[in-house]
Image 1 (cartoon, rainbow, N blue to C red):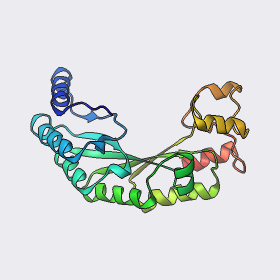
Image 2: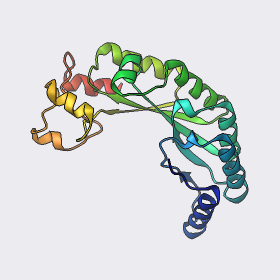
Image 3: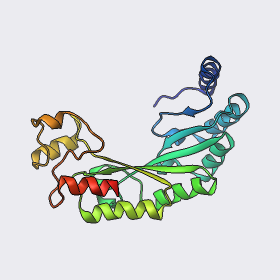
Length: 206
């Protein structure tokens, strides 16, 4: 586990702000709040006093606590995106190896919304085992969590992953097909039993 120290972060941000006249930052860190709370408190104070620009983050529901959200808000965080991926707990746990429960997700979004931090979510459609029921669970969890801006893209089985091997072995993905070599967020990569491609696209649109 490696992370920049607070001094290094502030130094780079000050340089970027001055060099390019920036007015906004987006941190491409998939779990910004994984930092220990004392480290985040130091970063929050330094950012607030020396940078001050609004910014957005990505994080994991398990990392969201009331204290960390307070520090985020204090340093001018305006938006946070959290991964839900699927509302089906079994698929989320067994297939995607995620440890967050529905309650973890609802709690995280609630804490952010209560502090007036805009919320968005990442969701995957067309994963192995997808069905109308799992789709409805994803919609329900987003609604129940009060997500303001849900983002949904289609799953793609990247080379070297267990899920690609699974998709190839069960016949839902043909790696030799011409269109299979290109990842497209808005087009399903797998053939899902009981759900046609056009139907999946419309489910995403909805």
